Every structure is written in C-alpha cells, then in structure tokens.
Image (cartoon, rainbow, N blue to C red; front, side):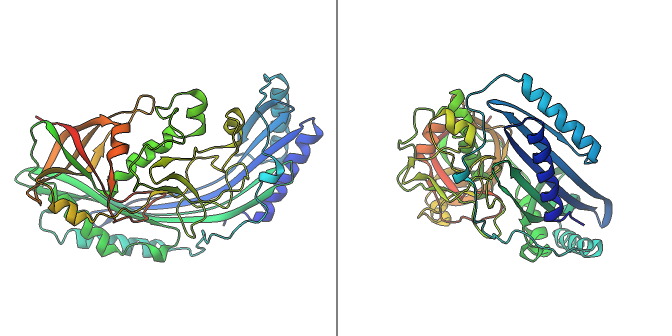
Length: 439
C-alpha cells in the first residue's frame, strides 16, 4: 500500500526544519513512493512476474547562493539526520552561483487542480493473465504468426510530495496501466516482428486485448517480403506512431538549458517562423487523465497550457527557474520538460494524401537516434511501405532518411489523424523531397 500524503508531508516538513536549524537559508525536499507490477507472458505461459516498491527522498539545501543535494532510500531517522548534516557541510564548501535559488513564492502553485490521474483499482494476476491470453489468442489466429516475442501487462501506482522552505508542500497520487504485445510473422524462411501497445491512467481506458493482438499481427505480417529500394529523393509520410519522434527532437532543441549553453540549432530562431502557417504545437499539463499531466512542475511552479508554436511561429522555450534567470525570462513551469506535448491536427486527410502520391515512402518504424540538435542534421534508419500510383505496394527495409531539421520543420504538413496515446503525440505528417539512401 502506498504511503499517505500526511506521512510524506510530515517527513518533508521535518527535513526542512532540520536543515534550517543547521544553517540552510532555503530547502527543497522531494519524496516519492512507487509500487510497480509487471506480468510477462509468452506463447500461452507466464514467463515471469516482477513487483517492486520504492520509497525515496531527495533534498537540496541552499546557503545563500551556494547549493548542494543528496538522495536516499533509507528513511531511518538517524540516517536522515546524518544525511542532512552532510548535505549542509557540502553546501558550505560549494562554489557560489548567482542564479541558484528557489522560485519566487508568487510563482508557486496555490490552487492545485484535480486532474483525475489516479485509479485505485488493484488488478489481480488472473485478470492480467486473461487479458494477455486474449491478446495472444487473437494474434495467433493469423496463419503467418508463428511465434511471440512476448507480451506484458504493467501496473504502476505512485504518490509524491514536493515541499520547500517558502511554505509550499503538496503532491498527489498517479497511476498508469500499460499493455504491450510483439508478434513474430514468418513466411518462406523470413521472419519479421512488430508490436502494439496501449497506455492509460485508468485500466478501463486500455484498448481491448483482441484489438491489441490483431494490430500487432497485422503490422508484423505487412513487413514480410520487404525489399530494398534505390536511393533518391521523394516525399516521405511519417505514420503517427513515428512522427512524434520529430516532436521529441524539437523539445530537446528548445529546452532552456540548450539555449543557455548555446547548443541548439534554433538558438537564434525564438520568435521566428520555423514551420508553415498551419502548424501549431501545444504543451498542456492540465489535460484530465493525460499521461503527461501535472498539477505543478518539479519545483512547485504553476504550469498552464502554452502555444510553443502558433501558426508556424516559435514562441516558447521550456523553462525552469534556474535557466529562466540566466536568460532573463520567467519560468513557464517546465522544470522536467514537456508535459502533454502535441502537434495539432492539420487539414489533410491521410488517405487522400496517400492517393495523391505517384511515388512516396510511408515510414512505420525509425531505427536509431534521428536529429542532432546542435546543427540540425537529420539521419535515421527506417522501414515502411512503398506507395506507388496512390496505393501501398510492398514493404521496405534497410533505408536511411537524411535531411536537415530546419528544412523538415518548414516543409512538414500535418494530417488530421491525431491520437493521444502517450505524453508526446502527433498526427501523421508528409514532407516532400527527403533523401532516401537505399541500395
């Protein structure tokens, strides 16, 4: 059973008091309790079951502009007292940093919104096993599916408290349930794999088992008899399952720390048009049941929905207190990065886009690290399906897509098939004239 909010709050308050008595001018304390269970299942049998429970504490002490931090999972009172004393001693000998310090009190969240992030339902292993059996039964109903690479059902429950010496002390419960299935298709001595998954805050919002098994099997079968293609330039359509990777790269490039260090290829582009006018990119921490939702950021700072890109214009960085001070800006509650980060739907229908292509590459999987945020170069391995005369023709593998992120951002066109399946989401997108390195 998770520790209560009162238990965590009381412990955090005691740590702050102890630190202040030893000479700290300011203190931050984070306490987290997590219980995680995963049932792994393969070919009709349970492979193994894992359960873990963690209770951890992190404390940061300030003496004016000096700062130090420590963490532990041993919450014995004597150990905590010794740990705090060591942290204070480390702080005393740390170098000064004029930007170190807590957020202003007025920036701290004082009216937390209930975002409905916790499902207190405890699922039995029998329930999970039946769910996974349903997935595999559906998957193996496809004649070309000869094996399974495994499926899993995970349940995660957590409770946390964040507190500081400016009077902030709050937290909340969260839960996530996730299922995963990877199918192996075989034909003519050739084998291909693909997967499907579903994640949600509430178990009742998970996709049903038959659908998961069916999608995983269909995807794996479609990859059989893959061909290599000639190198050249052509339109590339990124399926929504992989298009979100471009958003993740963009998020890394617009962090406050990358701008402070001057290591982002976009460092001179804040306030400028870097996408087409129809592109809008949102970060919204306040979506109910959202997988990236948070009532406040990792410093206790208020957060709200922001238009990172509006009508193609790059408007917002992802800022915490420290980096916002260096940049002479204000934190927008993004200590910890993005929350529910998504590219809004465009006006284009994916099926119509496909039907208009004489020759194009439809990407279903990306392999390896894609974009370099220091110079914007983009190069990634990929597999997918060839489009010829407006129709899918044959699967493709072992190709590399190469371009530059500035070009890709400026020329991407979003479709209208956005789904919220993770904390970062995007509709399918099409970009013309990307270099494909094949045989």
